[in-house]
Figure 1: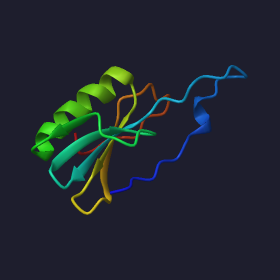
Figure 2: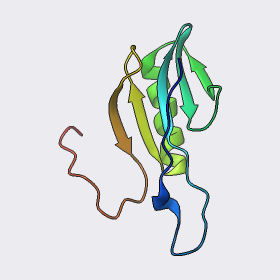
Figure 3: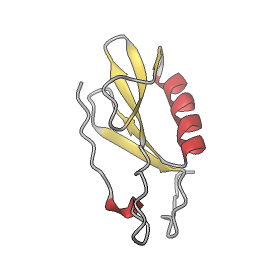
Figure 4: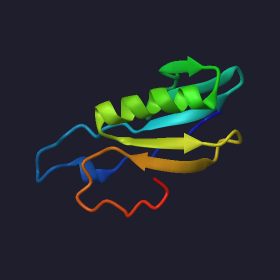
Length: 95
């Protein structure tokens, strides 16, 4: 499965070029689930269940202060959780 990524210009800080942080994706694989950082062609971690992949992905996203993007079995994005330093965070009603 190929996951398309977009790069954000929001990571360029007042004239200082900063490497954009790579969001973390939880994706379905033929042999289970995987945790994939944007821009990588291979998963960082292979896991048997989606719950295991969510735990690992969430830990990585928190550590890197990026967004966790959760995909369904068909590859469509089902949810996103932000662990970055958002100056205007959305009002999350599900957590």
